[in-house]
Length: 222
Image 1 (cartoon, rainbow, N blue to C red):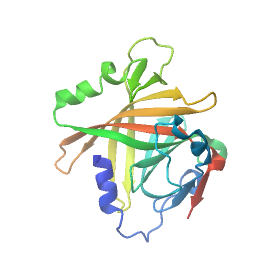
Image 2: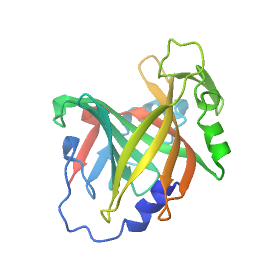
Image 3: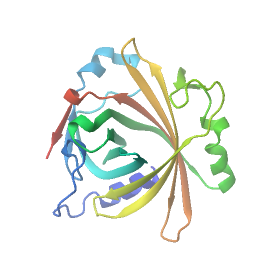
Image 4: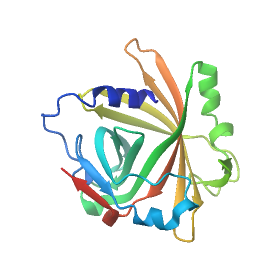
């Protein structure tokens, strides 16, 4: 379990009466959303990602400011999933550039600073091509560079159901593979750094599988 999700789950059942700030599509803490799973079921075993459930409740939110009016919004469920929405110039529907749904597949805690630096090194998660779970994945970031590249740093501001807030340092790399001529599956590798109450670093590296979600395939509840 990630340090992020341990905080999410610990506070998920606390009071939910106060108003929550709404993001793109009106999503907010404690809201629900439904995903149309028809497209996933039609392709069956072509995906590595497990067919998602249809109904989810948001247990935590994350915002990443990319600059120049661009933001990444993340909506974490009480399980191991999160919805990611990229926007430019605001949160109106017309500002939405991309919607993806990710499920955490694996995670590993890291106990030493040396191991942490090794885990987020370009040689570990920045190769042009990667073989993972028997599939070949192509790097999405800097795809024309036929060499290893450093992971992308993203500072994420997270808020859970108890209105606790904290910063999450992400060092990530995104890969993709063709499921068919029209669909991709994504592999997000992320080194996650947080700090506990004693301001001691906690490190974890995670592997998440993701898919594209169309606007028509997503229904917000509440």
